[in-house]
Image (cartoon, rainbow, N blue to C red; front, side, top):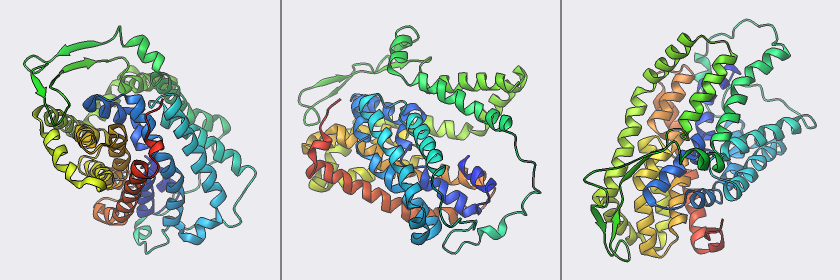
Length: 415
């Protein structure tokens, strides 16, 4: 979606694709109303509020760095310094709310609150400050031939009226209000006791024991599927879509056909996500995560760095921070306990490191090429963002090392 927007603003296909992928990093851990955090909590048994708070002590630093990184990639160091005040306002106004909301409210509404505040602050700042030079080139500062493949610009259109602009924002306002409500703790506490179906898995529930050295004493593994169907993020988004469709005067038939069309478009992604979640459950109950965790414990002092990169690898392979957390969350917890590290810290590191792998996973690359109508150039997009992904992931790994050994107070469990 962002890539299509940038194309509409005149950016080259490579610039639109690459910049969208780089920007889609720091917010990923709290995406879809904190679904990655919830997935991590489900496989580790750790408190999602504590996991979300720990991620909120890691990613704000990168929420501040990424906007500078983004403009440097597009316009070079000189271009970046020309507009550094606006970049700083953007980064700070997202990073500070990201920290505050995740640590003192909940992990479900972090991205909604931080993004609204950041956009508002940037718009307000640009009312009183303007750059001396406007950068109107659609190309990247590096060799960018993708601009040559762009179709000729469409004929100029009449400027949209104020009413049309306001109405174009209505669906987004409705979505923000509904998912903001869905992400509150009191709403979940209100509806979950009523609209939840708990299904113990016959033949698996309490049939498997975890034993030393993985845990201090033998403990039975529960296997209960909690179907909290009303408080699911997807339910809130569906309700928001229905309300927005009514405002836009969609007919009931068109709503149903649009839903069916969407399901068809994402059918492969849904199957992939379901398969990865199934693999994560299998690794947990088969003991594979425990075996790998004991093996990774041999990394010793360097484990905070390599454990973070494990999260990066998981997202790069699965295309989802949630799937990576489900796949490696148990391993991170077990390894951390073996090494005397905080399992909250390493669980969060899996998610924080994973966000940097989002820009190179196959799913994101394909979505970027499709959104920009630059089909067949997925390899070019991957080569462009690959080293940025590795560099940012390594920076997250170094930061987690500092949290583990130099600034241990930042890894303390407080909420």
